[in-house]
Length: 417
Image (cartoon, rainbow, N blue to C red):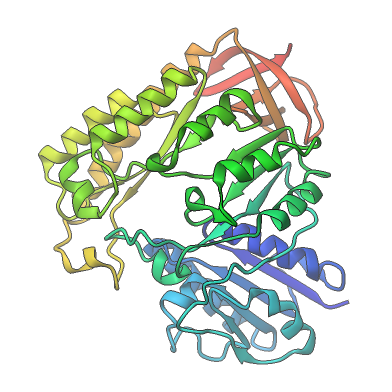
């Protein structure tokens, strides 16, 4: 039996696409770790940050150097957005942001090909998946592409225009996945823009809520402008998890406008406060970029003050990185030192708010999906996506009611109620 090794960089959409391929390969091939000898090496690439691009190039060069006779497959966003002839030289199979459904066929036949197409088709590529191997929650890709064109972002060029999966096929896919996973995470490049046959995201959620084997539906990310009253209703009355990840990206109107974000800071705050009023138990996390070229010291201080008001459960903070091909790349960079210091200050605020949040849950009971053994505890996340260490040995995949009994060194520790 031939052996394959896979490296997956980047987002949850990449993760889903990679697992779909794994699901098909595992019937005929043996998977090994990426640092082991294999006949086939597959790299799902990312280009959303410069670090991701550097990792992509590193793994490509490493396979070429250490395994020159292996069949090398390079897939995804780096291929589509960059299509760097020098980096992609001497690769057996190159696949951009479509034709991912053909990868196994080409591997089976050992065909060398470049399946890159500059103009990405507007149809949603269905990639079936029967089980999310080794995972307690399953991702379900429901949407691809983005038409927002934020000034700093390369993803619309890498993933193409918005397109959505067929609602009937997604229902069937979710039903299959729920045989192994109590929680289904709906993911996409712009998940909130899901639409098919007159259905929007909340209609898809309503369909999936009818699947008895699904305990929880979670959204990987959604824009604040897309959290409508129907989404809130599904959190209050249905199976949608009381946690939303809503990107902010900047906390001042000047920078938001320069970034081409579709809201003002007051509009964002008003909606967040409305969501929290409607669903008091909800937690909201966010993405933030610091050091955008037009972010002055004063505008950054404004962002910090707004972060204090918004009190996110966690902040994914990224120092701005210039991406060639984007509008922001034409602007003068603020420099590494400024960006690092601003990221440090956001991280310090994030830790402070997180500690206060953790303390507020002492002696409260949360539903926790057990994921793994960690540091002598069972470990998982609550429906609010709080990480919890649970006393005792509990099987992965169990959904348990856990009482928080202490917070130590930034960790919430609980026991089965």
